[in-house]
Image: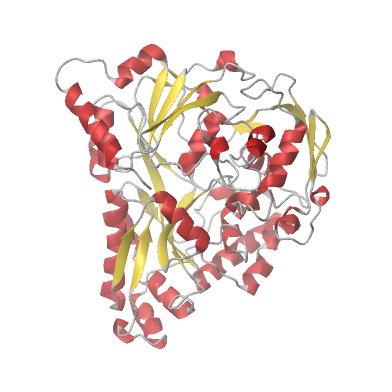
Length: 539
């Protein structure tokens, strides 16, 4: 994740100024003007909802765009969005949404069912390669269209019988489908804007820039200074504008957690993206409730490039995974920031519990690496462990893994730290050996993450192709009963543990600082933020 020196210098200057006298801080001014200042961790590559693959950009999208439904701040409750009401057929396979008459784009155009139909088509366009497309695979023929088995979008299970009705037809029951529709990828896009700037068939583009971006959410994009700040202001044409209390949100891409924490202390931020590990205990012991610590439905893991040597050999991948002492990592490396991960999906997701599929076994790790032709690490090629961030805590975590691999296996792994948007490109092109990776659940169901193991899945960054897994995964969604579904989930977890395209390391605990003047904030396990529910008030 990337931040430039220009932003760091700006924040340091603010710190110096605030120490010279009782100047009005950004937090103080925000209270007066209803302007929220948010640390947002990384510079977004662009503001295209369909091609987004990062949480930090998703937070901005939630302010700018609105889908048929949206998530409340508890991360669970489904609220009406552009759709004022909907019905689900008794068989659970047909969903019908009725759009509100007063839903408009920020330029005054009406938001129509045709806009949603066009957006779904673009989202599934094979040439665009949207990584999040697997979330709509419950739709009839959605995957067939994405993978080219059908060329006619009319075959896909989404229709617009009139300009205020959208109908979805599912191939199988998916009780979580309303949560899918609340996902940030499934927002309508203003077709004339995309056509004007040639954005229909390309990722991002000029249509996402200030002055060009037409959105339909509670806020509009008014300023974007790359690597410094992105500003959204209240959208007067939003259908529920009177309920929106904030007048503006300012997002700052601050990669260094220590810089971000100092900015919070000096009154420059209301909300931080994270907290430096060295400061967690201090804030936890302090009076007040500014520290918010929430276990996340997420996993931090190592992704191996399974199509490139040496990690095309499952013995090498297993050796690296078995060399990870997760208990030690959780207690000494990410203390307060994560729990040891012995399954790919965090236990409790969707109400499912998981046994420990992954383990630490140094002796077995050494044996496997020797069998692969690298006894004691002799002859092992030079490889880099890629980290898409320059945050000190993330680099320390990478160094801890580096030491475990060297001590147990005798291999020397370098660490390559890169900008966040560069790292996203490396994932798409699979031009890495092994990398620090993560998955934040968009829906509270194991299928959301287990899909990463399916051959050809847009988010299968490991490039893994394993016929038994491809045969096992469909049963997660098509199981005839709950017992069979649990067994299918366990089968997928076991195959990932056996073949190791991904090696889970820890399940994150998100730590954030939230200023006492922020009203309406609610911690939740998927970091959902309903910006319309927030306001600023003295306490």
